[in-house]
Image (cartoon, rainbow, N blue to C red; front, side, top):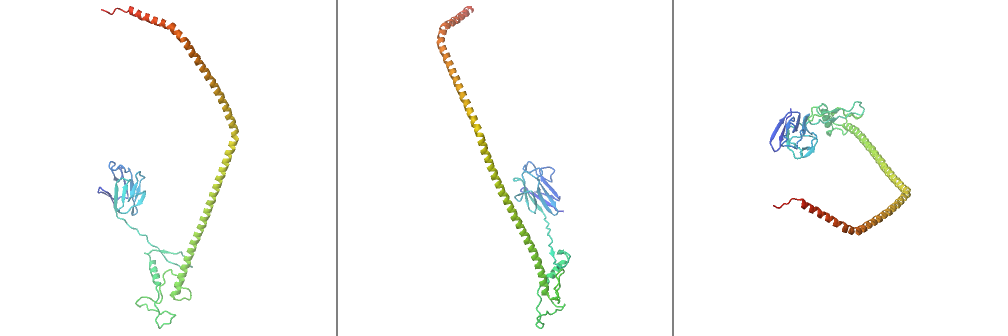
Length: 332
């Protein structure tokens, strides 16, 4: 069972877990609880550490402050031993310790087959018996020893099976290798040339297919660019035509409405002139009334004062004298 250790950086506190999921936050239901009074920037459910297969992953639970892995904000990322997590930009930092298991991918070895075989090409892994065939195929590429001087130049001297290098007269052929051409006998050069020729033909066919695919892609991209360019040119022309039509409609509307507008403006000006004349007449009448009122006051006010003022004063004096006489004597 994989064990992970989480250390609170700066505090020295460590927690050990063997669970497949570890939730960290302020919520009391979390596996690792960070106190709200010490870390208010941490969310209630801040992040989740999961064991998937043999690897640990960290996932931010859509928090407001975010989660940072080695200084870089992440949403979900693969963890490595010694990684450092920070909860929010100014939050606590956690360092992770666990054992990382490496799972190397097995390389695949392709064993060539003859063109006339109907069976598909078989993929063999290094731990299969085909690895032995590949080793033998590599040893078959070594050049043959030169024949002794006593032999004719056109033939190879056969070697004994009990010789020091362990090679026989017939070079072992790997499984699935191309057979030699007819008439070649046991000549290693003809077999190699046939194998190389077949491989070259296959490679040439693959290259030709790739070139054809790239050529078709280039033609498609060129046609797409031409179509997009044509659409842009058409749209520009359509916009120019609509703008011209709008300007023509505006000019026609102005020419159509201007006579009526001018006539209404003239009628309104005539009404304003009549109203101004009426207001001027009213102002004159008001001024004449004020003048007549002030003139009458200036004429009648002195006479009224001469006649009424003595009466008012005498009446006031009589009232005061009556009050004095009617009041009791205040002296002792």
